[in-house]
Amino acid sequence: MSKHYGAIAFTDAVVDVQREHGSDGFYGRKRVQGKAAPGVDALTDDEREYLAERDGFYLASVSETGWPYVQFRGGPPGFLRVVDDHTIGWADFRGNLQYITTGNVSGDDRVALIVLDYAQRRRLKIFGHARVVTIADDAALVTSFADPGYDAEVERAVLVTVEAFDWNCQQHITPRFSAAELEPHLAPLRRQLADLQAENARLREGLESGEPAAR
Image (tube, rainbow, N blue to C red; front, side):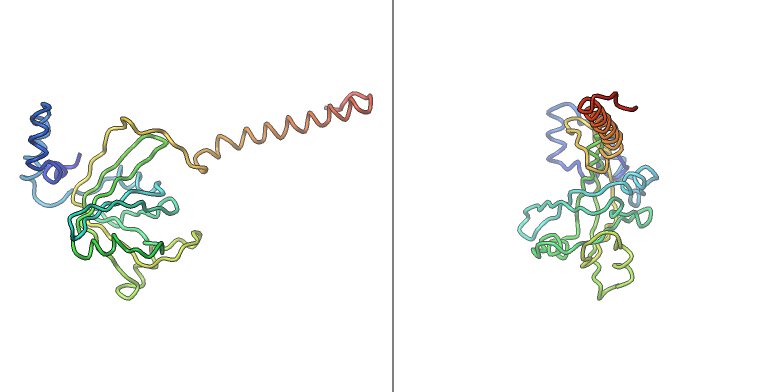
């Protein structure tokens, strides 16, 4: 947990519930430390390496009605990038044209991200302030987030100034694996299966011809 995470997440209502369950002492210290520390929390190498490997995350914004809105953002591994010690960003690909998140952050720039690694059961939570950058605003910046090998239209870029983050526990994360993560394990099995099928074919030919099959 970074220094300012508790100061943001542990509101008075949250503290009341923590007190009921006996966790207010531990988390109360985190809250006080965050309020006393100046500035915002810098990302470390751990967060940089983790985010560089991810191919998706969940993004929450707040609407003018006060309702939270959560959506999934996906792309090629590494499309979510660390720009500097305090900023992350990604290419916003053309989707279903609802633009709910884009509209929300124009009125309230506060966002939260949950970035999951299902295979290793890891979870990173991030608080920050989002800024949408269009091609008209900065074409070079938007283009820099594009991946030539990924077939999607980049409509804009989103930059988030990170305020705080927390590595969450792995409890209750069900392991899931992408096709790319499974491929190193499946490829040897495919080769073994192909070898066995070829051997079976040779044995079958030998039986049908009455001659021993060559090995």
